[in-house]
Image 1 (cartoon, one colour):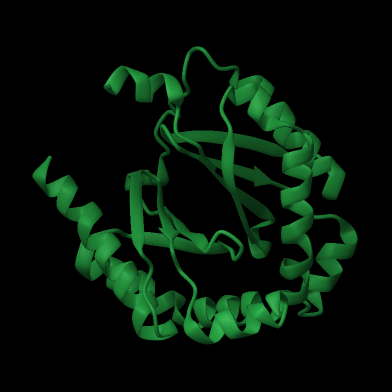
Image 2: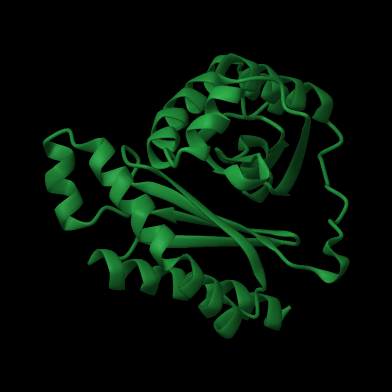
Length: 239
């Protein structure tokens, strides 16, 4: 248990330091979840001084584009340092941000033995099928129904969704022509609005506080990370 705790704390410490060194200000907190083959780092209280100036001028797209470009530049360094400091063998790395809430998530797929994924735990009282149907409806609103959709309950407040075969022909052509950053910046708000419209909270019987999305265009995959609000029932049990 101590070793697992150290991995979580070392990962959180590195991500906080990396953001501070490259953006001029670190986050107020980083909460790490590791459940092979995935890990997530939920980042809170993260807006750099220069970004605050741009946001006051309504330059939201510029801030997001700068973050995307910087994360892309740092990706291989981050993957290497996560291996050195935490022993996490990261195969693919992703990130998304919620500027209004000053939060974000960095998440990744870990290389595990045989690349075999663990069985996905899902609470018995919740319908996983109903939840996935909601995700598929949201996908149809923006692009098309995925070839496959998998949902992973990483912990009581974090759900990761992996969708395959989601791109439509026009998106594939834009990617082929190198119009990747503009496509991401356009798809993100559309995806979030669609996820809210299909009312996933009904299937989860929980409120969702944050929605994060990112893609692996080369593999025609899309990822969603949902951060749930605290379960009031569980909070009552603790008291």
